[in-house]
Image 1 (cartoon, rainbow, N blue to C red):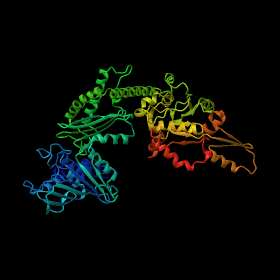
Image 2 (cartoon, one colour):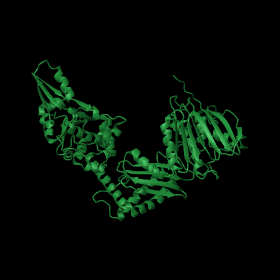
Image 3 (cartoon, rainbow, N blue to C red):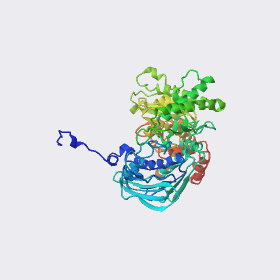
Image 4 (spheres, rainbow, N blue to C red):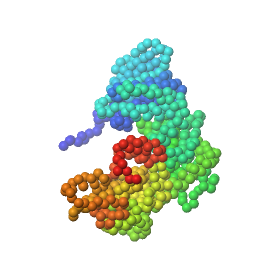
Amino acid sequence: MATKKKSYDADDIQVLEGLEPVRMRPGMYIGGTDSHGYHHLLREILDNAVDEVINGHASTISVVLDEDYRGVSIEDNGRGIPVAKMKKFNKPAVEVILSTLHSGGKFGGDSYEVSGGLHGVGSSVVNALSEEMTVWIKRDGYEWTQDYARGKPATKLKKLSSTKQTGTKVHFRPDPSVFNMQIRFDAKKVKELLDAKAYLHPQVTIHYQDPRGNEEITFHHEGGLKEFLPRLVEESKVNLIHKDPFVLEKEEYPRTQLILAWTDGTAENVQSYANGVRTSDGGTHEAGLKQAVVKAVRSYMQAKGRNPKGITLSAEDIREGMIAVLSTYIKEPQFQGQTKGRLNNPEAQAMIENLVRPGLEQWLLNNGSIADGICDRVELAARAREASRVAATAVNRKGAVSHRLNLPGKLADCASTDPRESELFIVEGDSAGGSAKTGRDRKTQAILPLKGKVLNTMQASLAKVLENKEISNIVTAIGCGIGPKLDLEKLRYDKIFLLMDADSDGNHIATLLLTFFVKHMPDLVKEGHVYLSVPPLFRIDSSKETFWARDEQERDQIVAKLPKNAKYELSRFKGLGEMNAEDLKRTTLDKSKRRALRVRLDPDTDDTINALMGKDPAPRFQFIMERAKETKAEELDL
């Protein structure tokens, strides 16, 4: 057992000098020693190069990964880090900057009008956490170089050949004693970062090289954010509901760029930047944007008499489906933490709101058809939210008779009050629904018949989805809400079975339902609550035995195993409605005998559903043509 120390005196006080605090507590400076922290080092050096671009001193940046992806070189054609000796420290300025916390040219004066980093710890922290760093500087008519190791100079500053060029190049390799040996730079993440920087700064050209991947790319986007928005829309797998987005560009302080539009998606997607730094956690500038949007849209709707009756609009309704990129530059940015994930400047909220609101209001007034489409979108979002709320009120069916009145009329509910043992069968057609109701276990199995094919929800908004009666009944019966409001704690059935005919129409309906669940209730699938029932397509009676086959292949296998010359009777079901209640129970409802497949998601699920159920017919045509030769004529259900 450890002995407790009784005293606490001056000898117990530690003073960490130089860059020792960084090496002892790296998480305080870069957020952690995982892959995110590893890549943060690259962002720090890159931001220094971008600051030269922002302030008009550089136009090109070069980023070259080491062949093992453990190191990187970043070079700009800016002014170059000062190399003159600082009398106070008796050291070259570059050595002070790279080996001393809170040193640099961004604390005051005219060196930088705006900057992505005013903590003064960026490059010195990278140096402290690198096993080796080398800097090359072109300025004052010469090229200079100096080596470092774990934050300390390994060589003196050396003067190399003369040159008329200017700029800075930094090569560093993060220290494996700080970071896991398995961590490397992710080429994909690096390219995405550089591409985003090029969109934000149309004046810069960024050259990227990956010797290992034998790849060289130049990032330059003269159109800036106007080119950025279409990329975000494509990546989000949504569609714009209007052609021309709202664009705001202000060169005076605070220099601000904004591009904004509404989509048919349900998520709100805002990418914000402060002084060229991605603020992934938002901040006051993003809050100002959101307030401006809500107030501008409310003002327009009030002026045009567009406020919907019987429902109150929320801020979330107005911003549902909104996609935007906001970039602003302010003096003395106050970032939350060294990782700069959030902007905290209080004045930024009012500045951005006062800048965006009048511009957006005028844009709405000048573009009436677009504005009315946005208003329609907002009203649909509000009604969808209300419909989702009503659906969620049906959750507590167990124990409260009044709540049963909210359930769909066609639902034959089970008697159990325990959702863990309750099952819901979504059945194709009233006829099959009738057989299922007769053959089920009334204590634990509920039956919900569907009428015809449901809506293809791949491109539909949440409001449009809930307008569909069949899908609305499903949501109400399941009881846990839908979309962002989905709460699995309120799930009324642990297992949800899709019970469709074993033919092409049944497969199509099952696909439509799976599209709905994956698109609008993905957590149900991720947590393993959704199943596909596998009803038989054939019945084979031989002597006193009955066999069930789900397809032609299994039918042929069963027949082949019958005794030689044995007589048998073969029946093919046109649909579940032809099966009597006892047969349906034996093959698809009885827990000890039924066949069912649990639905799981894999990384390609979204792409597959988009290809098969999306608006573009080309992927479906390609899918069919690729598999046409594999399909036998007898397998076609014509």
